[in-house]
Amino acid sequence: MIIAFGFIIAIILIKYKPVYKISISGEEIGYLSNMDNIEEEIKDSIEETENKNVDSVIIEEEPECELKLIDRTLETNEEEVIEKIEENTTVTYKYYEIAVDDTVLEKVNTIDEAEELVNEIKVENEEKISQEGLVLNIKEQYTQNEEEANTNTLEVAKTSATERMSDVIEEAQAKREEQERIDAMPDVNGIKLATIPVTGTITSRYGVSSRIRSSDHTGLDIAAKTGTDIQVVADGIVEFAAYSGSYGKLVKINHGNGVETWYAHTSKIYVKVGDEVKAGDIIAAVGSTGNSTGPHLHFEIRINGEHVNPQSYLYK
Image (cartoon, rainbow, N blue to C red; front, side, top):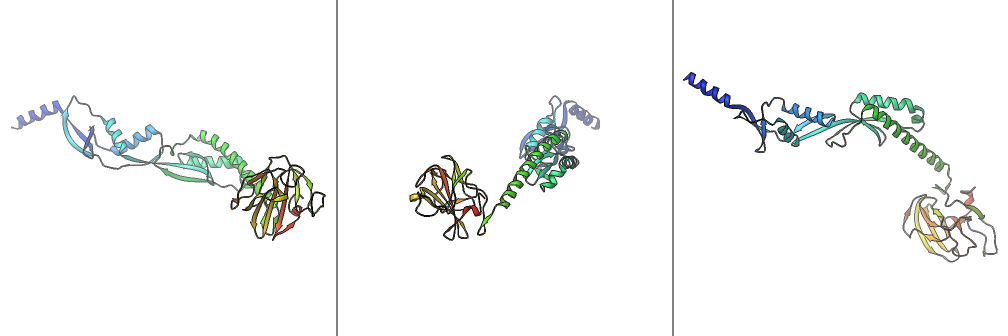
């Protein structure tokens, strides 16, 4: 009986071979000859094919395996099985982001690469980085999005990060200079002025008398071409935007603290009553409407309803 049993086993082993049938959620996906370290195989496969820095690989639903005997002529399909399991796998990638504030300069795979890149950027731009108060930082990032995990080689990253850093420095320098310009601007009754309304030639100053007026001049006339943009000088709310007698098309802005600015003789008005405006916003265009002898902006500053000399603050 033992000999007969042995013959039977031998015949079976000659005709059949043992494999693992793999199923997910009851659906057969193929056969494996070996179940050892399947998770490592999947991880290695992902790392090799995608060239990403894989942090973890989690199989969401564990494959079911069953030992079976199949015809020796049938081939196992490890690659297809692994591919199917990968579809049921969550892959988390890790990379290192080099950034200045919210501006990302580059992404690399390792902390050593990140530190080398930061040090090189600092050496090349040390004085400018210090002058603009910029801070380089390294952020360890995790993602399950393959596109987000795309990184460059260190040499490519050095070139692109250096170029981006130059742009960041230029932007920071421009912002600093603009802030310095704004800081140097005057304020009216606690309201900070940020810009002049229009660039042009002063043709009539505050307080002068003229045959075309019934009283002394209440503002400042700045000649400019018809259609030239007029900017609001400070943040505020539009309280008037319409035709107003000798002023022609007039815009009045309330800035708070009793401060108003008036923009008269305009050819076009771009705002309406109730609009909130920011310093530098274009609110109208230069024109010659109302009591006017040519295209210009009549600009007034009023405090608690009383007009004051604009040149005490602007166009000095």
